[in-house]
Length: 345
Image (tube, rainbow, N blue to C red; front, side, top):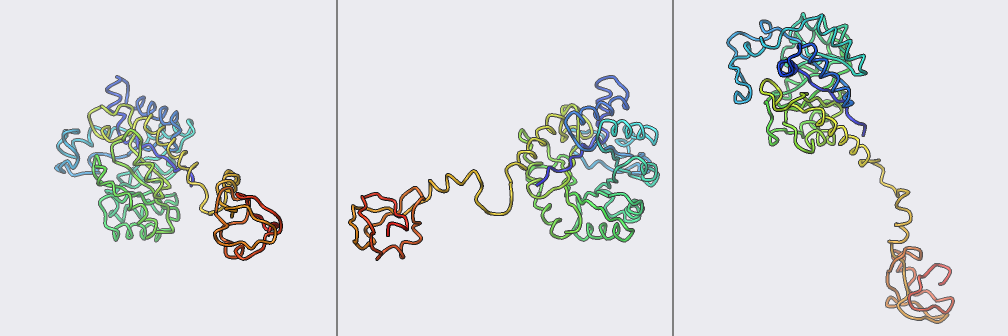
């Protein structure tokens, strides 16, 4: 296995951090990028939208309103839609200078177009999985497209993949995703990763995570073990902040822990070929069994079944040759507990 490509979904969490630290949203966004780079994350991801083009004014909330009390989607998006092309260009340049990839999810055609020269790949939200004209618009641009599959039937995923292929998109990543914030562990349904890999063998498969971090970051480790090549998780500098996505996001320490897990998994999974490892050569010899005499025997005696017992070490004749040894003649006087070798019989 190879460590998965790890995306920190900054989303719009930095707006709340800006208020908390009394700095501008742009300064907060750069602080998020700094902390992601320090954690050795591969990609910083943002979201590009305007409230008036993403949602109708009366669209109800679908999140946990005890954690994010805003009652309509429009009202929520209005709080976080202040950045445009200029700000994202600055964040793009800053991210690349820190050695990470940059992307931002576009939620309208204008954003998709102005992001073209900035993003290393396009990310399409679960909410746009059935927005086929928009998917084709992005797919035509010739960049890799990563797309989430939350709250979808397999047939809808297939339609989106076909749409991308129809317009020439060759590099596709499908994210298993559960469109529930936060996702209860019992609903994480990580086996879908393997389903997507089986049904779509010619695309890469990843996991976009909305499960609240646990002490061991086991959700992401399990996703990797099940075959996720790309992993995306919301990122925050303070998980206790109220508001949009902090309550299910990981902080820099969570991401560092996840990376350590990936490295540990890479170390322990090894090679699929079943063979004897170098570290096993001596134990293999010493811990296996050989045919050993149960009594003193004289030269010329014929070996009976009762004269033999399999014992360690495995430096003599293997017990699997027992039937060949029984009935053979002893070539020299041998003491009880002698490990038999082929030159003795």
